Image (cartoon, rainbow, N blue to C red; front, side):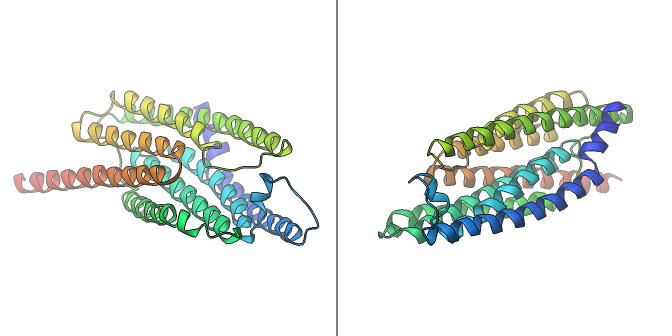
Length: 292
């Protein structure tokens, strides 16, 4: 009971609305501040090291800050969905990865825009594959969203279901603590590197560690759900979802085209698993309807 109260206090609707408002305002402020720094750098009024200057040598770099803030908020939203169905949680993970790929594409475009040499030929293939990955991930996220109300539990034990949801709320609170600690560590490490002259950015910062923790949480939920789920199709489907998130985690650590291809693979796998589950459930309903 205490866990449910704590969940509502820090992950409930009111907390979410307050955080959303704060994130939007912070994103606008961060965008304007980053844009100002880009302007000052372009006017040679301030100077940065060769590595750090990659964050300010194009006005498109200013988009990196608001997208990073929105990604941080989306991770919070992901943690909130954990007590819901497994489908909702996986769908939110694909939404986060979609935004992550968009941020990478914008950063790559800013690098091309700021280059004085003809590097477009070197980057266009990677850019094209990443855009394709974005499209696949976007469609996958929409597909999951269209089935967000579908429950992942088939059980007649209402007490067991309530206990399972309570356990997932406790896990969500624990994940929120890990999220904050991981964010603090990643931000402090990156800030230290900036002062040391290395301001390079990539998607492995924070997200590689967090998705590792998230996969462990997904596996834990799957194992606990064995107490409440007797339908093999749901168990197999959830296992397939975990496989797609493992591929997402590997893709985060893979640079360039290889990472984009893995993102595409994860999106296709997740969509195929969800579609198969939906078809099976529909045929099951049709069969029950015919027998009645």
